[in-house]
Image 1 (cartoon, rainbow, N blue to C red):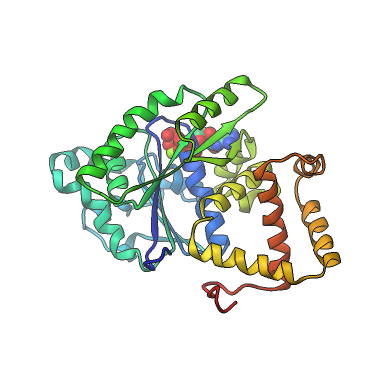
Image 2 (cartoon, rainbow, N blue to C red; image 1 turned 90 degrees about the vertical axis):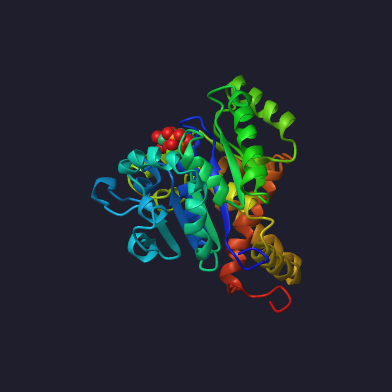
Length: 334
Ligand SMILES: Nc1ncnc2c1ncn2[C@@H]1O[C@H](COP(=O)(O)OP(=O)(O)OP(=O)(O)O)[C@@H](O)[C@H]1O
Ligand SMILES: [Mg+2]
């Protein structure tokens, strides 16, 4: 929860298809839930890919987020309890038929906000997966959100899609949601063996110097396999490159979150209280838990913030076993 004790509501958005929005929403939700945050994942795409990613058969689902937006059903009737800490508001193709009637009633921009607002004190994060267009469902997502993350793959020239998106963002901010925050840009499906990925990253870096996440998601077929198996990457293949990349991203994504800062500070303090020998041992263990490739780069003295962050994440996992951190514990009273 943020300082007001209410959930962050975050849209993963870009109007271009196949950029990794759903993969990012699903794996971010899963990682946060596995780390003790209460998460609601909202599928705003009638394709229902997020719903499927969590292992549900969309043809078998009768009640969806549409029924909530139309005020036909209650939240308790529609919500699916996926796993500990993770709830899902599903969607399916039938919602597509509803889009037209929403266009007719203009007040419907607030339909999703009206659904989510009363739930904000029940969750730490509400994550919204958006469809690949800037129609009424994406608009609803932005109106309901406290912030959004642009998800960009190097498959296309990103600024061409980002410019119209930016106009929509400004319009939403002006007319519907003054406090909507542009949280960051995540680059997915990177392959830095190709020049193109690096060029796109450079363009993003130039245009969004303070927004581009240092973490990025590499091309990794295991992410696709996990999705087909109806599991998050952390359930399907926690040792994969995909899990490593998403873990890094989510840690960066939540770094400014108060509860996370408290927890990281707690581990930082615990680490500092150890003797130099103990510190060294723990870091050696942490290195072993990194992939061979990452560990080698660290050993070579490569100065990359992501590598250092990855090592600290592993270090904190070890400290967590030694000095369990109770969630929602305060920094003053660790
Ligand atoms: N890093 C990755 N490496 C390899 N495959 C990936 C990666 N990320 C996503 N994929 C796969 O690429 C396809 C598109 O990803 P995804 O569905 O997440 O994109 P999307 O932006 O949600 O698409 P849409 O706009 O159609 O909803 C999926 O099959 C997914 O499993
Ligand atoms: Mg999608």
